[in-house]
Structure formats: C-alpha cells, structure tokens
Length: 295
Image: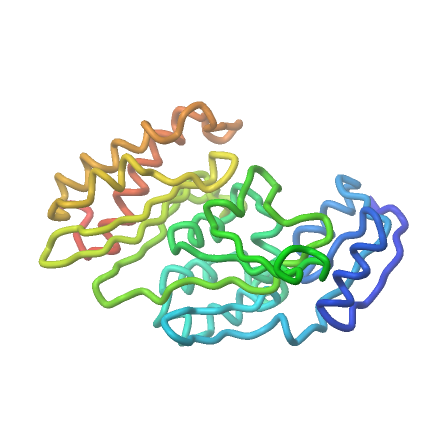
C-alpha cells in the first residue's frame, strides 16, 4: 500500500523544525523513518507534511562530561553500538543498541526516533528507564524556560506510542548518569522469534557496597503499556546480599507492581508474560552481578 500524499520540508535547524511544526497542523518529524514510514504505508498515520531533520548535525553525537553521558537524538543505533564512550559509561545501553534489528535498521534508525515512537515492545524505553535517563526537549521560544525543558524517563513514556512530547516539540538529546564502579546494569529479554521484539524485557541497575545491595532501579517492558518500575522488587533487594535466594525472593515481587496493565496476544498470554517477568529480572540481576544461572 502507498502512503497518502503529503508535503515535504527539510529543516535547516532545530529552531526551523519547531517553527515548521508550529505552523503546520498535523505535521510529523522524519528522522530515520523506520517507525513512521511503515505506518504511513499502511495509512495508520497520514500526516499532511513531513519535516525532515535528518541533516541536522546539532542533533548528532555522543559525549561524556561531568559524570553524564549525552547522546544526540539523531545518533543511530549503530553509532551507539560502536561507541567506546557508551560501552564504558552505560554498557547496558551499548548492548541493547547492538541487539536492535539488523545492520540496515541499526544504521538508519535513531535513538530519538525509537523512544519518541514509544513502541511498548522495543528495548530502549526499558533500558533508559532503569538508567534514570533525562530527555531534553525543544519547543517554541514562547514556552516557559525559553522553549527547552527536561523530562525524566519515568515521566516521558505515557503509554503505547504516547510520550510527553508536545505537538510542537522535538526531542534533541538524551542524558543519563555514568555508571559508577560499584553499579552493575543488565537488560534481559524473552525475544519474539520472528521479530526479536521483547515479549518480556527486564532491566536492572544495582549498587553494591561490601556485598550488600544499597540501591536498585528495576523496570520491565514488552507486555505493559509503558516501561514499568518495580518498587517492590527494588525494596526487596536493598539492604540484602545479592545471593541467588535473595534475588529470587525479590524478583517474585514484581507481580505486586504490574496491576492489571499487562497484555497478551496469540504468541503469549498476559499471565505467561507476568510469570516470565520475574524470571527475566532474575536473569538480568544474575548477569549484572556475575552469578551463575544454576547457582
């Protein structure tokens, strides 16, 4: 099927792109196009105008400064997977980027486009949530704060294909704290055999001092409308030695944090996915801490 006819504009800057969005109702931003173009072909999205930001170098790049990893929204998955800075600062993100799609997808798809699309089955929203990422957003100059604002991962993802981005706003970069030497992070998932999307995904960041977990961030995705934190699991880990028994007891608590939002499909029921969430969380913590699965 072919997309419905649309106008095309190539933005010369972020400010120009914001202006084009503000003056053209229903216009959409085009970056790598891996999410938007297929939806347009199926006519699930019918924007009257596409605003191409693919040539804006100000939205590209990876840097580490003052304990913060910054990634421009137009940075591709391949660039993240090839970055030593990302590998050293946030290995969990580096591994997730390397596992996205195939080489063609990784070389065209961008981190900004991925998270702005907010597909519940993708890996990066869950990874960025446990990494306590911040999303830097640019809007019209008349907005409070000169048009720029920063939103936490916990507040950025609102539901399936829905984020805190306003109609006239553009995601410009993503920032996250560099992992400390006593912090261990891992993402594990049960992948769909045909698409590699997450049937169940689980991310963890644990802080360990003298063999005791002193802090934890846990999130699951793939079967819930948005990345879902696991405060019950986090509380179950903190203050305890990360033994196999303690990890199993804590990860079983994830069912307390899921509520009724879990969904299923012909491939896996909601009940099955909920049960797998505890298992994938356990796998993630075992990998992060170096424990063997069979311990």
